[in-house]
Length: 228
Image 1 (cartoon, helix red, strand yellow):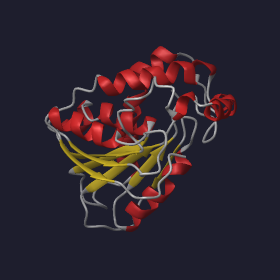
Image 2 (image 1 turned 30 degrees about the vertical axis):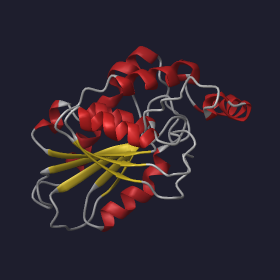
Image 3 (image 1 turned 30 degrees about the horizontal axis):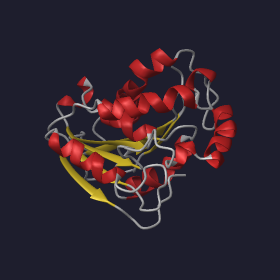
């Protein structure tokens, strides 16, 4: 894959943490800029990146959905290495903690990335925004199945490579969520109570699922944090 990224690096800090974030389906790294800015201001070097085949942030194609399925989450490891390479040795504390996360699709990918070798020997915190189990994904009552949402997809599918059409990506995301096998991880879920995509109870279902797998999960539900 070829994608663009953006790093914010404080000139000095006492913190031994670094962070990597990415965005949701059809969006761009710009969505994560407030998170990166806030962390950099607090002394945490942070990198945000675009997903392959997403045109808003950097016009780079994804040629194969199977490649995206199997390897896109590895960009968190690539981002981690690139961020560390940007920081001259000895100028900032060596990283002991990796904060990785994202919004929606980016949240799922960050959870998958937690078990990559580059993060194994580090303390990790995964921040998953706009992320839930979507238990009603196939229900006619779900926002995905409304006429209005289907019309928005006609626009959104123009923002990604043809191989990443919503008819392929959405069912895959649902299966990936259900098959998560993480254990022993620290995960923080943030979903607005007005998030129609996650839906009522979706974040709580995800918290329960991840907790039952043996993870330490905390949640925050602001009143106003719409999915898009």
